[in-house]
Image (cartoon, rainbow, N blue to C red; front, side, top):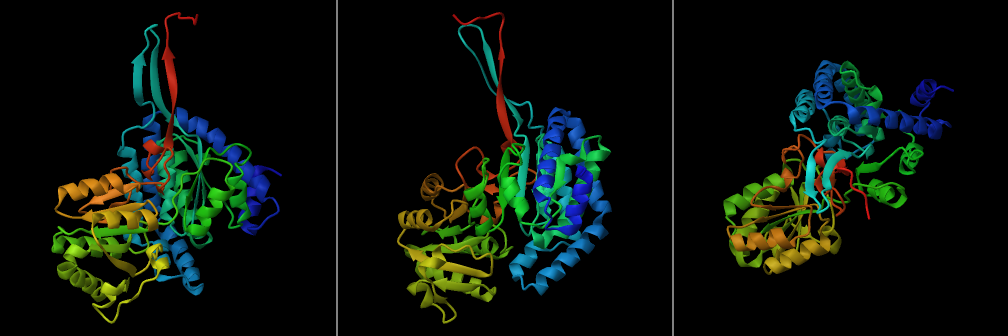
Length: 435
């Protein structure tokens, strides 16, 4: 069976006996394409990105029609409001996706950067130079925009991408991937540099985690606990991952109330379904008399359910009791846990115990307290006097992101083009031999 016919069969039949063979073929194609894009000049990769953006705009009606089908199925299946929000596309969101792809083209070329250089006493000159990782597999769930973001970032950094979309976003992602491949071909690059797994069959995930015969270099999961836990448990290749986005806003004793209110409402409610949404509010007991009631009241009036400790429950009958589980929960919904703490040390201890090392913020006019928080909170992103929803590669100036990594190896925080690079050493000599 040829690879093309196998792909057609699996695309139509879903759970096909040839999933393993087809996935290995996808891996081989990706490896061959990775070599070509790694050696392609920056101008050609940028031309492909701009062509992708144009293709996304040209395919707007097709992408939105596919998304409408995904949304209808999702609503029929009883998906939560926040989940539907992550899945939904409209003209504005799709235009933003296309613009983000074009913006990636404007980023400096990450390849070939000399990261360090030095000369040894024997005259050998060493350079550490940025290179692509190779083939990056991205496994994601409900966000169809990941198809474009991941594909664009992988191409910019000279990598090939294998994208496995969730069942809920499968149609939308398929149409977006077709636009990305169209852009590659328009610039004379192999379309196989971006491949969407053409099946909803979960067996494909297992094949990816096994490495596709040694063709996958890194796996990036973007989804809920069960997906990330499976990837981290089963993967035989390196993983860039985060578990929960259990993010905190700590309102310090010297916080400006108006600022704290605006930051809190944005951090919690701007988009509740994103991993940078705040899930817990901590308020210093030293300012609770003036700050706690207005902050909790603002949340309740905005339609956010509040689960609090005894001090918070005493403020309003609408507040329900928080349990230990609430402090560790990523709600991704209009729900927040609220707790009073006896100062900065207790706030840091709480975040260390219950947080997920994703994004945590302090609101304070006390620079010393802010400095301690930024130093001692061991999260990928720590923020002073701003919303946790800035945990986004675009907001960092990365153009987009392939995900937020909360581990401590290689990439941490928003994974952009620089984080999708490895390095090699170039050594320049003049005839030296080792004694």
